[in-house]
Length: 74
Image (cartoon, rainbow, N blue to C red; front, side, top):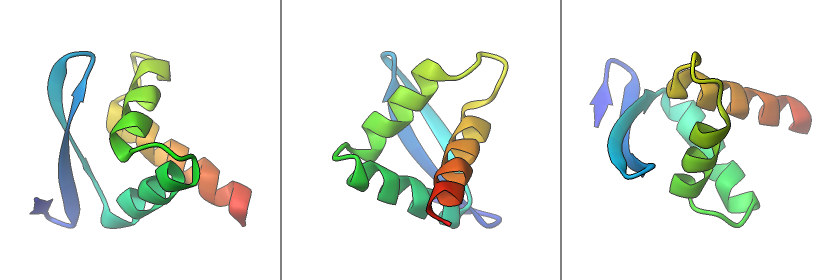
């Protein structure tokens, strides 16, 4: 679902359904990261969720992850 430039995707994390809204460019980067790592996007999101600081929103953690990966490639 697209909202004001954001694309919302739903995941089951730690047994609970949650939705994350990110810009399409971030989803593209995360999808590429998952494929390069041989995991699903859901698995990458779950791993990021489990490792993030609880004070950092999941959407922010995913944006930072995609940014750091992009900087590594550049």
